[in-house]
Length: 513
Image (tube, rainbow, N blue to C red; front, side, top):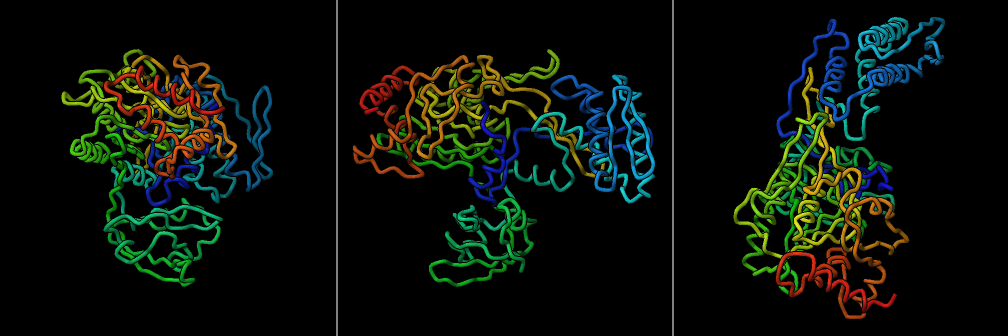
């Protein structure tokens, strides 16, 4: 069973608003698509149909596409009195006291004519209160909803946000927010940011933005209000709980660089790298962490990819390359045709391929995070610890359309070097840590169909008790999974799975189940 598909909503509340939702991998340079059907009416729709027909990862069912498009238009007009009656010999669409019939086949040209008939019927008989633009957008959304969860039509604003987020920077205030007890709070203030300079503190809670109350507002909406173009202003009112006093700030947005990599050296000279996403800044930030690790004499690494939603493919290849032989395969993609095959291999001659590594994943590790974990697992040099990952192994390419909009379309799928379909199986850990502390146990049915079975199982509650008895102080930043990884890497002298697995078995034998 896959993790619930409200991953994006979960991620927003977890990483907190202003860091923003990072979109899953797409082409670095958007392609351009143009339409040549008919007149200007339905021009964008025509371009979308062409792209889906030619580029989508699976051959499309055109009857299904046009059916979804027509029903999208009718659904939009439903509030105005449109009703649809489906029959074996055709469909009847009623609008007010008028009616028209249409029947779809597997002939694309015929179905085009039928769609245009419905399009003009709804527009003309609504006395043009339902605009052509609205109908076209509804038809496009109907098609996109019939494909997969990651293919998406983006208007100009959505495209701008997507490209800005993958750059790893944005115009904002440098505030990390979260929701607690139905209120929106500041979790963290980024150094040298507008919020830090103004004196905003963690635990301050939001009251209003630009004079408008944020009561009942979703965290994503608040994030949108606070972010914007650099050098523009926003006014926020916050409540400081310990003073029971409201403070109002007018702040000027600045470019905020998202720190996607955090590094620290743990006991026993084990380096800990937490990667939260894969933006254009990630590999550069990783290098800074690795330089510090070299100064500290790190002899092994914990690579924490939990809650990492993914990001740019090129960045995942660069990150994995730091821990692999140069030339070793990181991932390959396969599109609809046999010729649409691409391999991505390790890039760096001076890598850490001789250093022991444990990779932490959970059910919210997705896409580019799964590429890195899969590459290091298949290399035989890294041990995977945690829960089976999300299973997002599809590649999206952005195609620009007329008027500044774009289509994000699934064009191929990722496979690990050993040929495992990431979407179908995810990345299955050799050491499985079940989070049962809140009554939650991640389902293992996906692991049953995978080629790699977990060798050992631990429950978080048991690990917590075991480490507590030994006087280990656990925290949100250093939890039971990190401590377990630290112990299995302790005194490990060479990369690989044998020594860490033996140490994990020793720990398991000492835990009272």
